[in-house]
Length: 429
Image (cartoon, rainbow, N blue to C red):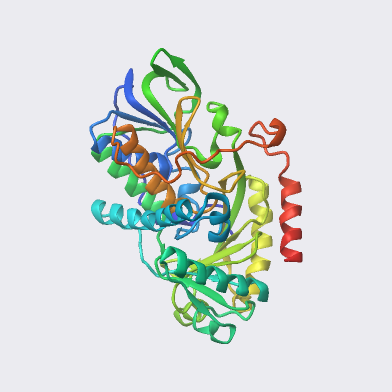
């Protein structure tokens, strides 16, 4: 089979059915920009709470990174626990980390309640140490999590690592059994059905061009028409555009790319990943990989920092195949059948953020942890909009920084420099 520059996960979906004709709403309680996990999770919870909701999507429903990622439902945040404590203090750090665990429970609950057939499984994740010093850092992190956060991880010494991964590249590993995997395209499709069943209205091919204040409400200008909304939510992550400039200036879109092999023989697949973990390494310029439910090796990473284009997908496929063979030389004769890319959302502090900017609500900045966190943040943001004063939001009040000196307007001119910097860090540390 020749290489297809397309998202493998989409091949597992049933063909889409035509959306029913419906009247364009003049007014809604909440307009949500973006139909990824954040937007759909918010819409589902709002509609179940009785709010009128319009989800406005510039492309097809679930078009962005929500359906293109590796399907890893991970504990933790991009910022490690030691840095969390240093930046926010122990009590806030505990609440932030506990939210990452609650977010996995949130995904599991939605999958169960809505009967979403997305191969959700708590097979855990394995982080592998690219250098001996990284394994020493694993040990410190595991000790701190056990002592101060009440969460247990398991360390795997290098001589025992073959029970977890069929590679000689790494210097030990760290396992969290709480993490899970799923098929992200099926999960997003299930969320969309659930949101519509609850009463939300989804509008694909409806690009938001501008949001303007209109008294106590907002006027949302789209390519389909205008509507008035009491509240507007930017659920746009790495695809945040000029319609919400205050949020766009705080989010850096970074490309992430994935390849998927042909279906592997069962014995080879078991050798590569005996426990079927979600696996990623300890570098800044990291690789992440896993088996798909049909036994393909899915291998991804920051092959380039720029968001996806046909050229960057093609170039990244070659880079990732070479990298995959350094990890798994056993795959030398296996064909790569799919290659695709998506755009992740990084804040300048590498933290997720949920709140308001210029009156508009937002939830984004997941930095690769979006499957779980976007599900939880969407549901939590909906509770806040519905007036639930008992909502626990550990992200409330966190500074949401912009680039120093106002040198960023949403167009990431500095990505080549960032790429050089992180490659240098991986070399020296």
